[in-house]
Image 1 (cartoon, one colour):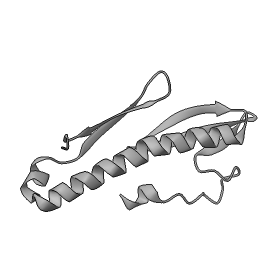
Image 2 (cartoon, helix red, strand yellow):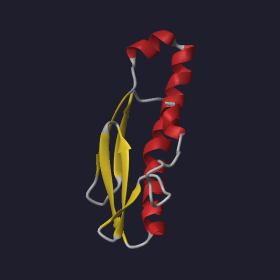
Image 3 (cartoon, helix red, strand yellow):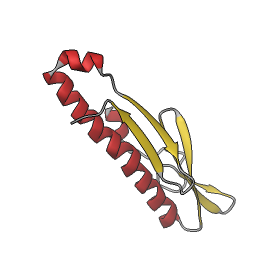
Amino acid sequence: MELLGKKKVRRDNTTGVTGVTMYRGKYKSVIHFQGKTYCLGTYVTLADAAAARKEAEKCLFGEFLEFFERWRKKAEVYPKWGEENPVSFSVTKTEMGNFNIIMRPQLD
């Protein structure tokens, strides 16, 4: 899970922003999560593409990491509960471009 927090820009990245590349004269913003690639859109400015990427990171990585930390702490206190309630999640992108994340199990 600690890999989600690392944000090193690849050496071959020409924009300097993780997940943002040049595409047909515009900036394309993408994010990878759960083995899938989500296109966040194409933007005229690098700042707009970077902002879209940052918002997606906050939504996907931030919410998931917070959930996982809460689950991990509860599983440490109640190991049997942790075995019976493994972490599972699914992500879908809505038509409006937002992410819908379903994480299980439900935590108090």
